[in-house]
Length: 284
Image (cartoon, rainbow, N blue to C red; front, side, top):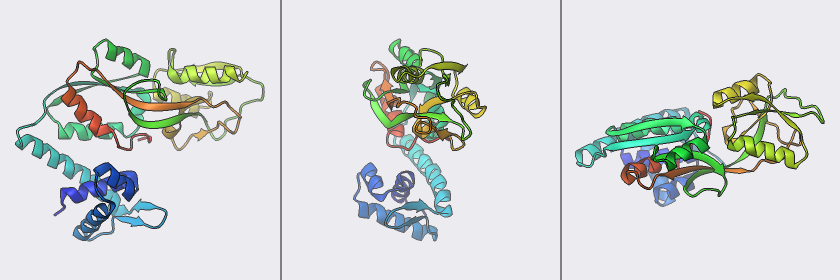
């Protein structure tokens, strides 16, 4: 009933909210993508996408179709690989930075495991610098980490900037030390936050040290202090307060995939392709 090519075009539009970007991702002409979406709407007998001169939005039926499309395509791809005799096998030791686990990454990994059920995916979650050391020691095959923009070689999945984050009710007294919630040292966000404050003559004090993003968010929500996070990962109930308190800019960050050159390149390529181009930098 629903053609895979039409589902792929629709899903690309649903994830990018742009017919132009969807066409670029798929390597198709924009009219072809538009035609695929129209045919899918005809087959479904529902309007899936509304568009005007400025916005592209999914309807409620479009949201439902996006979920079905992912499941259908996952099953289609898995069947194609299995019966083509090229079902990929192997072990993949994958590490991801803790806060990237609150993005769309878990969904991508779930879909990956559905498509490649014979790949043994082993997941390690930690801080970026720890994961990078494990990669260099041969303990991981691929890592998804945060680095200062342009600092490391690898495949950049998303580019972002760090922001100061607090509650709507957050109050910082003029001249008082900035109460900082941070990961233990060494930590990229901790170092950049402290360096930025000290370079602007601002004093600071650590009010909470935690190893997990859940701890950072809990401490911020409790009003214990403020934290530095990638802007796109700030939950809706918290606020970017950089300008409100004239806090110094912290810098830009790349979400980067880095591979172990000695590991199985076929399985690494498969996961890399599953992540690159997807919208991952939104809190799940």
